[in-house]
Length: 186
Image (cartoon, rainbow, N blue to C red; front, side, top):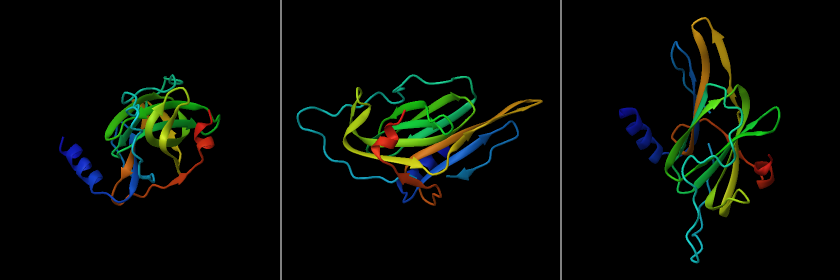
């Protein structure tokens, strides 16, 4: 509980983006850092309220749910996010999840893969086109996430990652802006 309060306080007062991975093993946990640039949001159309999916919604059906890997996504921004895990080898989207502004969600059962983490942030989600209609931005974390699993005598070791989509102090992760077409690749 105290850790969550500290993380929330640090997130609010932050200046840099950050992603932390937590390799999960039976022996313990290690930390390493791996940001996302943000643009200011325009006001939604006065004709109707902006559309926002339920937090944690799978935008497409999840692919290959046989693994132990986990990804916690924390969106401390004022804009919603659509987050993709894209297999670096096949180029196929394994997961595509909606994270509301100022919310977090967990993705579980990620099979071993080396994945790129792409995100779009914006306001007013269009489900048919699978994109934000107002003020969309597109980014990708520079370092892929390696959801490896190692079989040991005592069981299996796996990777758990935590990605913050908002500024965090002392962040060492890097992101790059990408084109909408790169984000929309299946």
